[in-house]
Length: 551
Image (cartoon, rainbow, N blue to C red; front, top):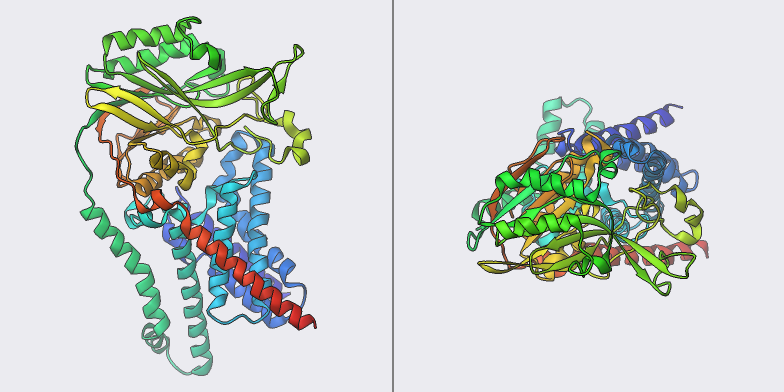
């Protein structure tokens, strides 16, 4: 019974440390010891040598991961209670499966160096999978923990957030080995004082490696931060509008014309003859617009866009970036999510970002959709739940996606400006975000609507993650959120003119486009792919040893 209590206590302790390390709770460095209690649990289970290791690992680690997921992401409940339960329980279970797999593989007496390497490789592989399958929910990928402390991870321009995951897990193992050495030293020299134990520990090889592993990346980051040169050439004036429209009621009660009036009313005091970009939020015009008509506004005039045209007459350089809800009609079923009508036609619906100016209208369809909200994952299995998806102004069910991360082309006196406009959830995906830059984007605009979660930690965490994307790509990020937080983020992850939540306002600043590609923008999540290969090798080695032991 006492052993069970110890294991439960250690699991709960790990969960609390993971939870408190997450923003906005403010104890980021807890993440460096948060996994240590779980490693001790694995050690104790190995000493007992009873039971099936995979299920043991799941059983003992699940409380830790459940506390982490509940504590850090409980706010999902405000947008979709059934979805929040599914996301929290499934995410906790999947994390436990990673731990269970490692605990099982570890039982077959791998070489000492392979034990931490296997766990790091398994965890990175899991995070990589979580970025790419249909149940994707990578909010708690470990590298995101440093979103609010970007000065210590400037090297993300080389590794992306996966570098943070590897760093954190490596330090956790070093702390685990150090605590084990302290325990062993106390057993061997029971009469020695606490000071003697600590002195012995501080001169050990493990302690020196631990300090080096913690300090070196931070020092490198500070050097990069203070020596990195932000190009201040060909600056453009940009205005961000925060509409502050209630997502549950007001956003869909107001017509697109009324929403356009609100945008113009809020933005006009900040617009000048030098304004090149006016950036509005996701679903700035929330009612469905037909794309054929959008591309032919001269034939199918729309009052909202005619109102925007009056802005272009006053401000000759102006280009508008905004979020729309759009659809397109087809004679055939062009995709699995196309919806059929009684007249034999089909329609696809999109969450869209748009660039609109006097000369052009360009569209990009959100390509990474929120599971259970914008897309039903694995419809052959969960298709019967399609109608339970959250109703986004009458567009419930699965949306269609774009085939690439399209870049918009805006014109100004300085020439052509190339802009990437990922939508909401897409700002969590480092490699996807960097594809806009790889495709030519010189400035990034994130359009989002975080109002679904209310005034909780959700919108704060989401804002901070854009700071990591700025570092990874060394681009200015202009973040426009419906109710907040909106702001300008420079290529070092510094925040400028951050708005208050639930405030209707507009902010203006000069930003500087850049064309240089970071190492991460060129090669994406290469580190995760290396870890994936290592994980596969470990599993092959484990399979060989397992089969030999059976024979």
